[in-house]
Image (spheres, rainbow, N blue to C red):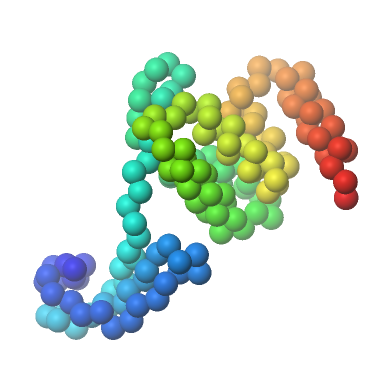
Amino acid sequence: MKCPFCAHEESKVTDSRTSAAQDVIRRRRECEACGRRFTTYERVEEVMPLVVKKDGRREPYDRQKIMGGLVRASEKRAVPISRVEELVDALERELIDMGEKEVPSHTIGERVMVRLRALDEIAYVRFASVYRSFRDLSELRDELDKLAEQKKDVPG
């Protein structure tokens, strides 16, 4: 592993730990040339499907794009970033498990909204208003009415 400080290519591992989910290994390393320490993370590289946009364009899946939308939707809400990351992790596992080489963007958006609705209803409405491009207040009201009906049907 190349040292980020001096670019020397030899380092030794001083500590390794597995993440709680057992999907990432964190390694503390020490450069054999300059002696400085740094951390690396090792994870299995998954092949994500291409995203097929509404206009037919295909682009690589971009985790940061989804994270950005979710973070904006949950601004000033009591939604920890760790929960947003868990949501995206679960989405990615589902996309990989589908085994498809291409996935329509609307499929990804709908799956994000199902998870977000369970996490925080206000963040869900914010995300849905952008994702579904509500044209006026009546479309937003219809979505809120559906959300209220679903909430009424859930015991608790």
